Image 1: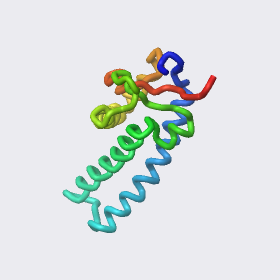
Image 2: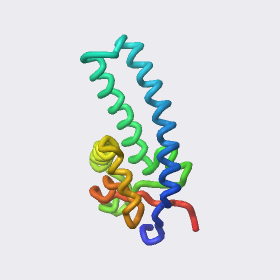
Image 3: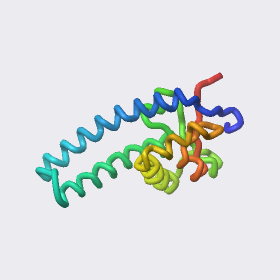
Length: 143
């Protein structure tokens, strides 16, 4: 399988990230509404911190579940991209690998997006967290 894979174009990665952002806005909106409905005002103090942690966990659950099932989130399916694990025979991400990938990707995003801008200079257009974890985003479009 791996011999026939190709690296995604930067344009495709960027479009997928944009679409991912739209999905995340919807997910965060609904999750924040639910939190405020249950907890009440969360604009300051511990409630605010707990809401931020809750939202990070909700987004993490979305990504980890998607990556483990088919290696794809909804935008990745639309753009025919898939994340694979280069350390396993079936290339499917394990729970442990997905659980490590999410905080690494979050950190790469929080550091002014440097973990994602890495793809601009990477020979295979891979993000820094994928290089570090030996995971890879591939283009599944048939040639």
